[in-house]
Image 1 (tube, one colour):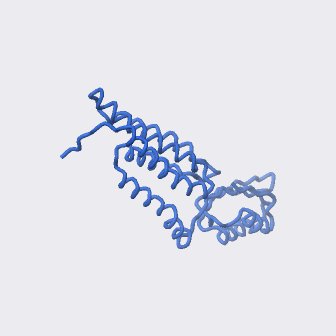
Image 2 (tube, rainbow, N blue to C red; image 1 turned 30 degrees about the vertical axis):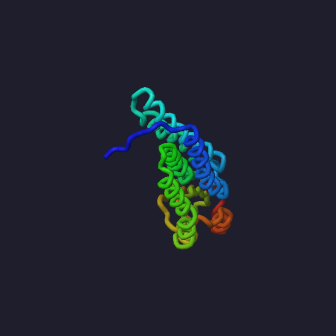
Image 3 (cartoon, rainbow, N blue to C red; image 1 turned 135 degrees about the vertical axis):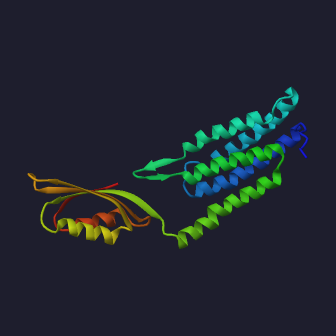
Length: 223
């Protein structure tokens, strides 16, 4: 059986907007603590705007005898572009996917609140918060996070230097994905380009120090 839509009164609209912005604030505060670009204010305004869009969508749909889901659907599409702005690239690594996901999910929570689905919105927000806190804690404790680096090494072309570099890379990296070797016959030097995974907590200074200790290495660049 379908649900009969009724026009949202001013009092109902105000209550829903307040609830929506509070729910957005809960997730936004978590993102703020994690120093993410989309934080408290962004999430509160986002969820409040999505809630208002749903309220207007329902009321305008009833007044004009039109499809009340049309405006709400446009909100979901538009949020995708906003979420993309939270995704940033650092070298070979991409960050901000979690914030982009919370932006998109909380926009739908705002729509749900605007439609009157208060309790399911609260439960969804609680589950998102659990994923951001408890699951994040368990992931950090039991799952080794890794970072992808591009490493460029210039070295003197002499016997054994390539093997020494490979040996050191195997010690300080988890996995070597690519190993590209360029050799200058006249210049007497080689250039090695490697993409490798390392522990997220491993410092670039530590990587540089280990590779610089290999005899024959003259220059080093790590992204």
